[in-house]
Amino acid sequence: MEALHAPWRIEYILGPKHPDGGDASIFTTIAQSSDDEANNVIARGKTCFAVMNNFPYNGGHLLIVPYREVPDLVDLTDDELLELMQLCRRCQAALRETMNPAGFNIGLNLGQVAGAGIKEHLHLHVVPRWEGDTNFMPALGQTAIIPEAVTETAAKLRAALAQN
Image 1 (cartoon, rainbow, N blue to C red):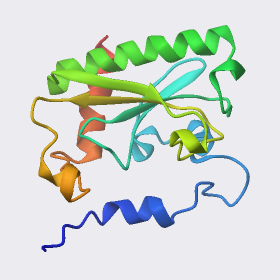
Image 2: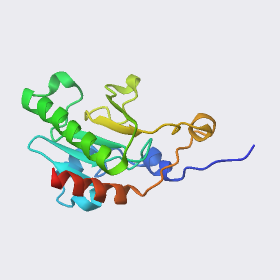
Image 3: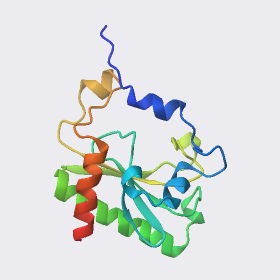
Image 4: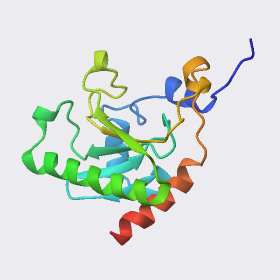
């Protein structure tokens, strides 16, 4: 059997989920940073921001994250919940414009048993999908093929979001 490698995933697997060694999640650290380009932040609102997933399931995979670190939807204020969905809609439109996907997976993993990698800080996944994007690589090799660098996709989406 031939080995297929996804070396970029090891950084996430082994890396700290709290980069400064404190209690703040990576999302809180990004939220408080002013370097949006380095962090692949593509849009900011009053209560939430959109950031590219550095360990994507598919090209264009992004996350909508409230600034406040909360683990569950019931912990969000009405304003945070509204902006979470409004920013999701804006990002979905930008992905459609820049990447022309055939569909989307949009969802939350709430709690460790539900697959949340950073369970203490709720985040909404927006994953563009194309016909035939599931092939033998993810099914057998457990490896995704990402056709464009995350930083390049972030720049395109940032520009599209700035126009709208």
